[in-house]
Amino acid sequence: MNLLEKIKPNLTSPYLPCDSELAKYISTAIYYAESIQNRPKDYFSCRSIPPYTKQAIILLVNLFLAQKSNSIENLMASKTSSIIHSISTINDLLSVEIL
Image 1 (cartoon, one colour):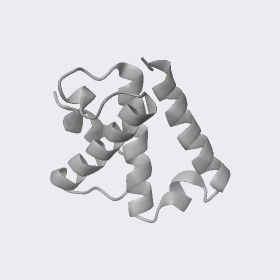
Image 2: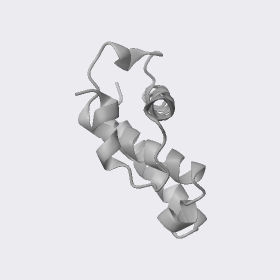
Image 3: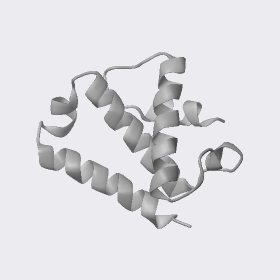
Image 4: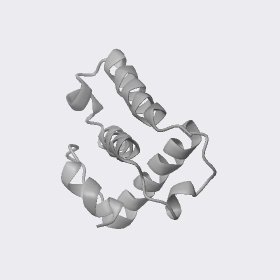
């Protein structure tokens, strides 16, 4: 099962893009994970993604979609502190598996 198939059931945003658009969001989230973990670009293209990193990618894609659909206020009660907390949680998940 590829990452796209694992992420689709975990989406919470009312905005559901087509698979090609969703794949772009996933690629962006993977790039973000690689950069936070100080891994080379395309590191996960030939390696499996560890569980905490995978969860962080799922959360980040959900955050991207919430912003895209302008439902961020519904998803996070329109509080800047909630968004900051979400990014902090994503970064914490990514830091668990840093090289």
